[in-house]
Amino acid sequence: MTAETIESIRLLESRAAHSYWTAWRRIPINFPKGDLRRVPQHWRAFGARVSPITGSPRLAANPINAMLNYLYAVLESETRLAIAALGLDPGLGVLHADAPARDSLACDLMEPIRPDVDAYVLKWVSHETMRREWFFEQRNGSCRLMASFAVRLSETAPTWGNAVAPVAERLARILWSKTTRITRQQRPATRLTQDHRREARGLPAVSRSTPPPRPDSFCSDCGAEIGRGRTYCATCAIKHNTVALVRAARSGRVAAQTDQAQAFRAEAQRRPGAAKALWKKSDLPTWLNNDVYIRKVQPRLRNVTLGVLASSLGISIPYAVEIRSGKRVPHARHWQKLAKLAGIHEGASGNDDSQ
Image (cartoon, rainbow, N blue to C red; front, side):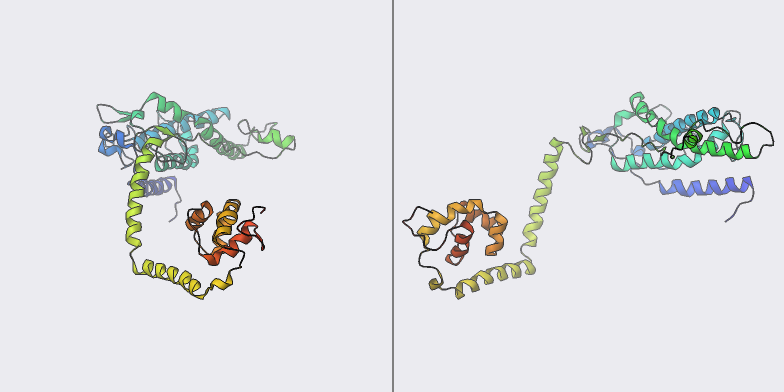
């Protein structure tokens, strides 16, 4: 689909915007479980970008739209400042029609940065828990931001200002190239990015991206502040971990009775049984007996790692723990390997304490 006039472009933009915001419709807003009784039902999902109060995005009816409106206002302010710094008129729009109460050029230039604002809000609501105390509902149903939360959102202003600066300077260059006025300057100044100054000094261009401040994380149950990457605070995590362990134990007991699990256990028992049947007591050195193992070999096994014990004997780690601690005496066919690991050599006897 192509457009050759400004009106056609505006029509396509409105259709694209409708499809775009429709994709947001089912995005949930997560609040701590302790706050849910005070959270209206229509606050728990994005719903629509158009407010039911005004029929437009103004006077948002839920938290996500309220956050978007506020951040768009911050972005518009930064864009207006950038335009003024370059000597342009913020009221002379291109795609946005001129209106007495709107700086249309600012609305045009902020469009490339709006996806960054959307991504910031979307990442926030997708990964973090919102707090009920950040918002309040007026009598007409509009959702407003509490002052402390608005201050937190306003801290993103440097991010949007740095992002819109090159866009504004590009527009200034385009307009400058169309003028027939003769001036001493060959191109407009880069007051926002200082690109000309760095270019004159032979310095490389620098990245102007400034990441916005990261939102705080809160427990999904009680709403207490927690570290990043966590879902619950220490107190609530105990409850959830207990439930998870009980569920895992129940699943484990069921899985342990399957045909595959029983076949695995039977095979695990056949292997040592076959090894015992093939082993003969005459294979054991005469100097290595139960007394030598108990008094000389077993005490030195504490210096052998569990992994080495398990791999040498072909046993499990829990069984290796019991052998090393002396809680279990392994079958005699293992004594010679254990004596070698413990550094007990041929010639030791039950009455010899020199080893």
